[in-house]
Structure formats: structure tokens, C-alpha cells
Length: 443
Image 1 (cartoon, helix red, strand yellow):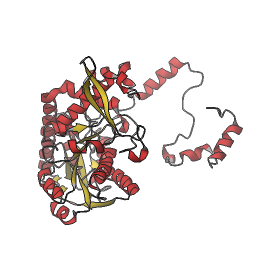
Image 2: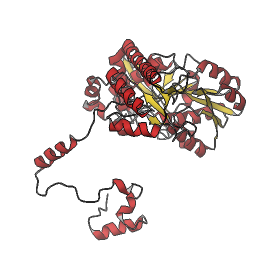
Image 3: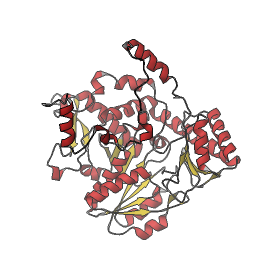
């Protein structure tokens, strides 16, 4: 950088160049109520040791051990200590594969193992190396479907995570795709509406299972409707631990699988980074964005790893690229790989069973204490509860040291006084009973 603004005049010139009057205008989108009005209340003249001690004492005021029942795409699962130990090693925490990738055999092998695990979990034939997150993976799958079918209409279930649908809307708008919503009945896709709206113009139907309400979709029935018109079935899984218990989307007829891998070895961390997943049937491999690592043998017959496909705009002509994805989630993918390797098949199944059993324990307790379980469709570890006053419950829970549930009216106006709750293996029976007690008091 040739120019370093170190005087008031320099700063004025820079502000003028970007058409901003004062520096505070750069932060005008931040509510004034959360902006610092005065200087930090730190005594002058403290040494670094003293400042660190003071800030540590202040940090103890934070309550970081509140039980959490707030899922909706951000799931708290136990992460074995070996995960952070492995991904913190120097050869991994700069996990970007270089442009001469074959010199990085360790990174390539880790990605290959990740792809193999994803294919095993999803029932698909090939998985890619990295996508930003589940929402962008779902949006990328729309572009894939349109390129494969040469159609431009995308049908999307309203029971998909609202934030995911918003990202899909942004992508589809930029590509000129027609986006059509399909409503839900009893918490799952309205198959009758799907039959009515699907046509020979439809490139794909997007469905999430378990969906945003926690309900498990009948993918076999949906698959028949989608394929009857020549459309692809794009299945999204946001709570990845469900794959340890439910039949895989590949078994149930999915053409493209997309998902979020945050549940595997990646903490919530104030919203990121997340791990987007795309996996496909073998006939669609060349339409998949991102990069694919393959296994081969060298001239001496030794096993080795290569970047088999890299259809990104950095590698080939932009107009030929399947996507302009340019960031690598390999470190998050490595965390997921280590986590799954440590759990093993039986360990993942046990985690899934705990999530299922504990969530149904909470459902039963809620129902027996006067709450209405809104949908009767089968659920995994999230479900919708209707209470008399959701705003009161949402206010009381954090006051009593509990996080969750999520008010749904902000996303679905018709679901007034409905709350979404999530239970994972980390929630104890005592925490669940305490949650029920608070909700009962408000109800």
C-alpha cells in the first residue's frame, strides 16, 4: 500500500474520495443504543498486565454456561478435544490448497477422507471440497439444476429455513430464474400443491428434511412427484446429526444433496464459519461447483491424491465455470472429518438417538403441562410449540438463564405465539425440566 493516512488531512481526502462526510457515517447502520458513548472506563496509566487482569475480571460477568434450546440452523453439540488439537496443527490451520496442489498430499488426503464420509452419510456418489455454508450450497444447487435440465423454474418448500430461502431468492434473481413457493400442511410439504405447481418448466424442487420446523419429510413420496415431470430433487439437511439415524437422501431418491456441516466439530462461534456441503449422483459430477479430490497411484504404484475436478472461475474461463466460489472451507471440513472419525458409525448413531430421545422427552413434558405441539408429523430434535404468549416466554427464558426458543411469527405471520425448540445430546434432563417449569409459569 503506497498511501498510509496518518494525518487529519489524509483522512479528509479519503472520506471525500468515497463521498462520506465523517468517519461515523461508515457505522450509521449500527443502532445508536449499542454504540459506546464515552471512553472505556479503564484507569489511565495501567500496564499491559494490569489491563489484562482488569478485563479478565470484567469478562467473568458474562454468563457463558446457559443451557441452549435454540436450534434453527445453529446447533450445540459436544466437540471432542482431539478435534481442536488436530486442526490447530500448523500443517492444517493454513488449509488452503495451493495452485500446485499435488505437493500438499496431507491436505488432499484429508479432503478426500471428508468427501468419502459425506458420500457414505448422504448416499450420494461424489462430494465436493468446500462451499461457504448450507444456504449458499442450496443456492448453488439451483444453478446446477438449471444447467443440467436447461430449465429455469425452481420450486422451493416454505418449510425450508427462511434465511436459506432468502439466499436462494438472491441467487435466483441474479440468474433470472422463476422462484415458486410450495406451502406446508401439518409442518411438511403440501404434496397436493407440489403436484399442482410442478411442470415441464421446473428445474428442481428444493426441500429440507428435517425441515425448519424439525419435521421429517416423506422424501419418497416427494421424489415421485418431482421426477414425474423431469425435475431434479434437491434435498437439504441443516442438522447434520440426523444423518446418523434417518435414511440417507440418496436412498430416498435425491439427485443433489446440500447441507450444513456445522454440527460436526464446528462450534456455533457467533454464527460462523460454517461448512457448506454438496454431494451428487455420479452423472452430475461435472456440474458441481468447487473442487473434487480424487485418489490415484504415482509412477511407483504408490497411492496419491490429486485435484480431479476444479471447475471454479479461478481455474478455467469464467463463462465455463460452474461457480465463482473462491473461499475454501477446508479447515471446517477437516474439523468435521476428525469429529466423524472419532465418533465412528456407532458413536454418531448414539448422538442422534440422544437428540431424538431427549427432544421427545421435552415434547411430552410440554404437552402434559398445557402447551400445544403444533404439528403431529414426526420430528427429529426440533419441534414447534404453541403457547398463550410467546413474547412473554421469550422474555422470561433468558431472565431465568435459558436460551431459546425461537419466535416463528417473524418468519411465518400465520404462526403467532409459536416457538421453535431444539434439544441436543448436551441438554440434561434437569435443564429440560427447568425449561418446562419456566414455560408453564408463563402459560
